[in-house]
Length: 404
Ligand SMILES: Cc1cc2nc3c(=O)[nH]c(=O)nc-3n(C[C@H](O)[C@H](O)[C@H](O)COP(=O)(O)OP(=O)(O)OC[C@H]3O[C@@H](n4cnc5c(N)ncnc54)[C@H](O)[C@@H]3O)c2cc1C
Image 1 (cartoon, rainbow, N blue to C red):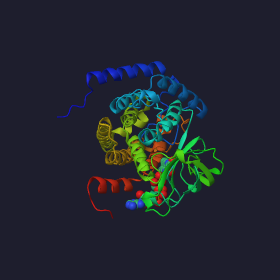
Image 2: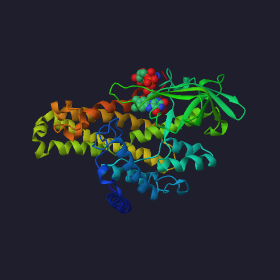
Image 3: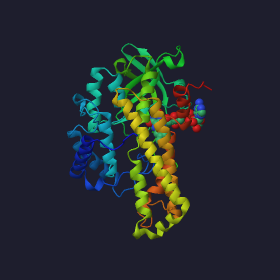
């Protein structure tokens, strides 16, 4: 039988991390994490203002940064701690258990670490850890989402530069970002997967315009990004020119691994369980007597355990120095769909209270996290590649089934 309990040195590390968090995390940040779904929520429901949250997160990031714990598995020369992916997972798990967000670096960091030149690593990696430089992802275009290789943003060679013309869409955080990585077409005559390059460019580039997209929930996290004769030095290509499809696909593997990471799921379920047995909220808790709700909650705990095992599978590949591919698709698919089921279970379990949307409403359980998590969890079965696309990848790459 496989023994999943922690080895003594892993338990000692958990204790060390736990003590570190108790010492360094600003208390106002505790339980500000969005929880529901997969820990990445479109909603911040805590009482802090966005500005105060940013200030405190910077303070928390600075404490982690001192220890090399913002990107623990990166080498120390780039600001990491040279830890194993498993140690990094344990750190993330303890942080989630404490109800705090882990201010991880963007996934483009792992891509630069894998494919970048030494110069690119030294220039781009350390500022990602301090949080001083923010990144956005230029993948999708109108008409090129799932069929990403059909992307049309053109990058024509002009001496030492590329000149970009075209458009990206659904670019999360582009309005706040300082840099973008973008997949662009550098050879329009090559077969579609072979004429693409992965480029890094500053958002202040002349000719680049960002237009926010208004969302039905009142937020504006996505943007359109337009390029009109935007010059980008050829040296900003990561990996070989025209081979960017493979760089971008690896980037997506990193992104799917982090979306699929199961660290905050048990914490989310614990929040629901504690609510259902809280004598002070007996009005909500009486619903737990419904056999269907009890059975649903129990089922979600079983699935959370499965999600954790899938995360271990991803980490075991990373621990051997590999890049998880099929494993990250399996984990992303299962965990993002589980996020939806958890949102559903939560809303069902609290009955009509699940319609209270305002975190300031004293009757709203857990500051209205359940209805908000319920709607925001949907996004993660789409972002990073939809569930259907993950199933296609698993079917063809892992099971050897023919392409449709
Ligand atoms: C929260 C979130 C954040 C995002 N952030 C970014 C970002 O920062 N940068 C960025 O570039 N993009 C971002 N996106 C966009 C995201 O990558 C795309 O929405 C996604 O890849 C799907 O593309 P699409 O929206 O064009 O849908 P389409 O590709 O048009 O798909 C429509 C439907 O058809 C299905 N479908 C399509 N092709 C197939 C197929 N071959 N087999 C079976 N079913 C298929 C899809 O599964 C989907 O259900 C984000 C999306 C979300 C939700």
